[in-house]
Image 1 (cartoon, rainbow, N blue to C red):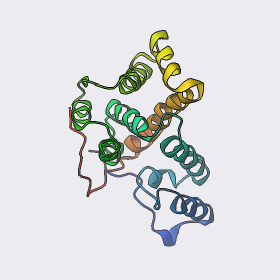
Image 2 (cartoon, rainbow, N blue to C red; image 1 turned 135 degrees about the vertical axis):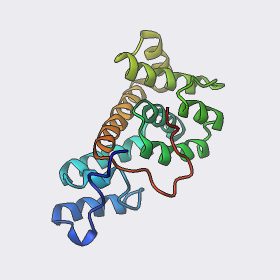
Image 3 (tube, rainbow, N blue to C red; image 1 turned 90 degrees about the vertical axis):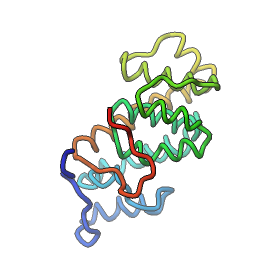
Image 4 (cartoon, rainbow, N blue to C red; image 1 turned 60 degrees about the vertical axis):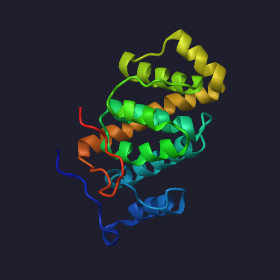
Length: 186
């Protein structure tokens, strides 16, 4: 495992821009400067924009929290991103994604979906990441479920969590020590 290259900066050492950024994160729905924003705090303007986008995509997207969490997990597995998995696997289950689906995703297996909207999210994210494009039938299914806004939001979720994965994989950000769900090593 890569050493944590960008560990937390003690609050007493934050510069003015970092303090403003951190305050915005703390006052928002996250309530704390959590792992994805620890390395990003080194670039306060980037961090501010990233956290605002993430706040929308995670908490208010047109696809809803349950399906956003599924999309996040598929993306986290693709990037072997331990932090995002540790944070979002328990949330996905609490939002109604069956634990057997989460388990299968963790082991990079194709889950058995019982809900059509979950299958569409899975296909959409898999195609986005693996094929670098989305098939016409999958695009049409997404449009049918969530319209143009939801389809664009789903693209945004894949892109945003890819961004966070690249940042945390590159900086060696470790998963929270107290996390109940670890991403299986393949």
